[in-house]
Image (cartoon, rainbow, N blue to C red; front, top):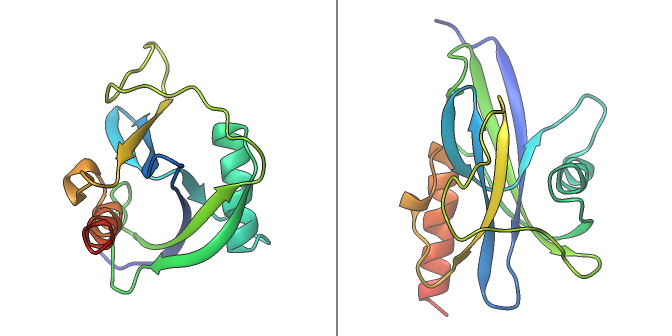
Length: 152
């Protein structure tokens, strides 16, 4: 099946003062996934504007971009549509003001009954691994964070 559409996704890596990274547990189309906060680039939007918008939509908090962390450098077919190629861009971000967000310690701690549910957790960088994530590109970034934390 030929790839006929590129989907650009933009994600933020937010690390708090306890050296923990924020992750999002989501229920999408009946599938439970753990990923970094973020989402799809909209037409006419730059990638930095996208991650700022996504953080406001998902967490109700404003962030600023510190630095680029990773961009997909290989062919990745979408997990949801085999005709789409995914390009993902990850930025290190920090909150503009005190970060306030309801989080949980339990994975997939959903209230139930909704088509799309989302909860947030913090994962300690000392214990993070690619296995904490569901999607292929997030696994790579999780592994990169693990290697980075081991070298500190």
